[in-house]
Amino acid sequence: MAKKLGPCRQVICASPDYLKRHGTPKTPAELKGHPVLVYTYGATPGEWELRGPNGKTSKIETSSRLSSNNGIALVQAGLKGLGIVVPPTFYIGKELKDGTLVTIMDDYTVVPELNIHAMYPERRHLSPKVRAFVDFLAERFGPEPYWDKY
Image 1 (cartoon, rainbow, N blue to C red):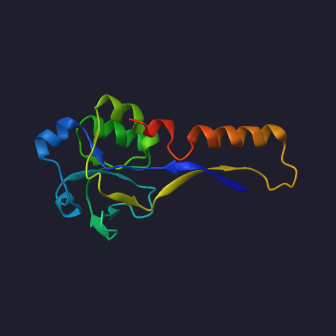
Image 2 (cartoon, rainbow, N blue to C red; image 1 turned 120 degrees about the horizontal axis):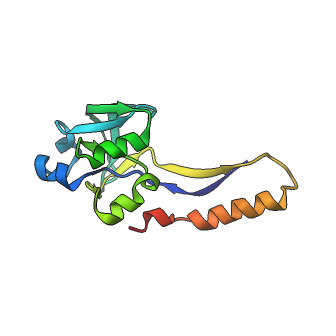
């Protein structure tokens, strides 16, 4: 069984220093030419799909400066000003709050949109401990997880 606990938002972001040196892209077309930090286990590494404010999606071929299968390593590279990164917000809630990373292109949504789920064995009579834990997680994460309140 799987129970949705909450959203797993991804945001386009960079360090203020990077944006000061290279400018702040406002549209998907302006991302071209910017070095990006690519998560290699993504569905389409090297290509970002973004949904705009009008609902239309754009696929952007990126110029990868660094590729990694480790999201935390990519966030660290982003903090050092090496490029633009698209991490899940649970990695960077603190950095967004303290301003060491800033979101850009806030009118655009990263596609596909992801969610966090609790997985547990399919059982008619679920253990009260498991049920209580899953309910706790659903309440804690909810429609707006605490790390998204920056």
